[in-house]
Length: 417
Figure 1 (spheres, rainbow, N blue to C red):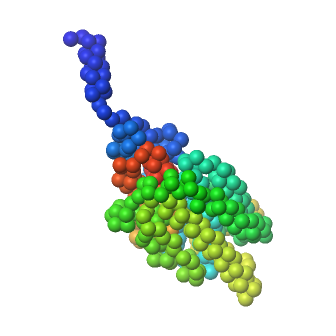
Figure 2 (tube, helix red, strand yellow):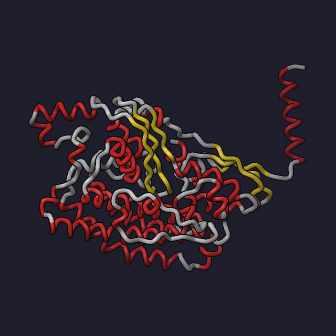
Figure 3 (cartoon, helix red, strand yellow):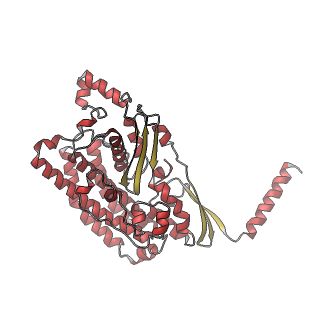
């Protein structure tokens, strides 16, 4: 048999099999707009009903953990930006706190409160993206375009603090690279004064919208037991009724000084995930307001605190002021040594977790006392709860599978790392 005849017989056989097959194999991704990122789901569907699904990940795997083993501690921060890029500052500060834990650095209260402001702004920005995209995937574009104006205001605050907007590289080991300017607080107060009205309008548009509720309620549910079995954390776990939040369970960055609630749902469906994130936006807003008040009180009682933006114990890892680098040889040398990783860290093994936009974002760090980590592992919440996607959508409609994926808030950069 010639090669041509072999191929012809093979195609005839495939055609016969496809005629006998009663279901359809559908590729959802890796470049489908509904995936909101570069990852693939191979669905087996019967009409509109999803029978099975197989995930394919790794399309944008960048080997961050391996790269980190070749980089000095200072240069790892930009890698964390590219995990969940919808709330990059949380990733940045989670990494800085991990290094501080290794080095035994205790940051001043003002630094903690400034960090909390930035991290909670990031949480609001993250949840605005997730919830407004859920609305888009149910056919409601208006809310998405409306709330993005306020995400833009958050970006302007970050830009004033560090010069960046999306991938922020914000802060340093021990605190921030510079003190917050008056313009930073002006932009912060502008956001705080205008955002509540817009958020209430957004909730009026969707929360009790009959079409939105009918699309979301009962779609993509998961029970508390199953969510815990998969090691869910964050809003997706809380939507299933488990009130676990790293900020409360293992407080860091002085979160114990703040009063806030942990919103929880009951059924773990798309609507519960949407409502939990909405409620968390309000809690984050309250935390920011409390942090501003605490900073103002601290500065009134201790005027010298106005100039505190990093821990003095972090001098070996904190860059000198730019004006000194430009004018003093010692500062220039010191700057070079930090950036190029000429300063060794202490040997040790630490794990530190923060409450990221999607759940427990952890950093498992092993140091052998050298200029770079011996081993660094990122605990990415997306990678963990995406494993449950097949179970969540099986038996449901294809349209439910789309909004279930949106409500999980799977971020490709965090998924693949």
